[in-house]
Image 1 (spheres, rainbow, N blue to C red):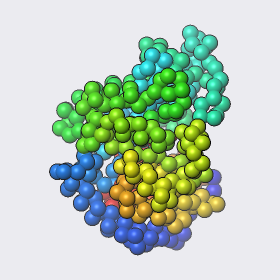
Image 2 (cartoon, helix red, strand yellow):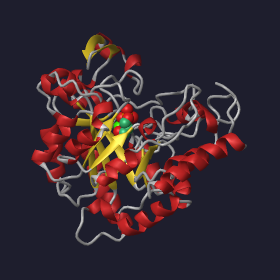
Image 3 (tube, rainbow, N blue to C red):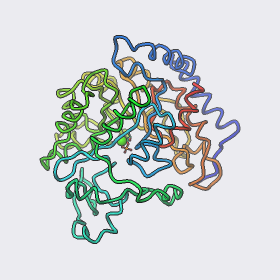
Image 4 (cartoon, helix red, strand yellow):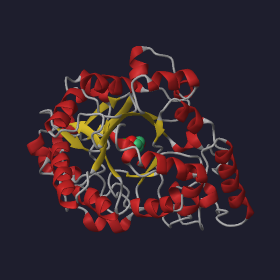
Length: 384
Ligand code: G3P
Ligand code: CA
């Protein structure tokens, strides 16, 4: 990692450029605050998310900067920190239960590799065109999966989090819904969730369609309405189109790098790339079935060859013009994940100038942000 210009003119220039560009678009820090006030006043008639604080701090896989991701411990810490929304990624078990894992390959986030009784389940399969070897949720019943314990995904960077290895099981989404209901009652305000369907085409091909199962759970727990405290999200637009036919819950289309193609497009022979989807026609199309987009942060403020932030794109303005909110992903405090201009020193595991990075991204007028460290994000959001 290069020595970051975390202080001095270079960084100020980046922030200044972002603020200036945001102001020119009517979406800078000042306008952002005005938008926040306007949106938090919209509780009456509009969709429920209009009552959320802006910028909205979304706890990415819970407070995954401090606890093994997608555990009740990670979700609980995020809520205790005050995160506005808590994210789940959803994959199915062999018997059709939705569980919270970032991917169906559970090799890196559970102790499955140390469990001799499951050694024979190790296998190689192709998921969305990528060959993977490991253990997969769809090869386990829920009862089997529940015997596993969650572990830290990146122990080399987050050694402290390994303290909690083995402490929690893999939660089902139904457990999370029950927990959210319970905590909402106890705390006197709804607990917002942000649930992503992972590899929906792949699972439909296995007879394990995610959307009907998700819709059933949302209905069971009263989160199927336009004003329900939950967002749905997917990298596959057809998954959000399917959800739109099943429930009214707000939907967000995730967008990866510009050259990438959603896997459902690949399967359907749709030639469009993400670069096409962020153009006016692409955004018009998304706005016909979704309420927001979840772009990678690089689509909002691209980086140069050295990994430094450059000028913001017009994506915030273009999406807002179509009534789409923006929940970009993912900001983390460690140097390893920050833009080069906000790194401090050369240790990839050390924290850089995360507040500077938040400032630059918030200045673009984004509506929220996914972060592994919601406490940092909340402090940064106070400055907007
Ligand atoms: O869902 C928002 C963000 O989490 C997308 O990236 O890969 O962490 O699910 P990923
Ligand atoms: Ca996700």
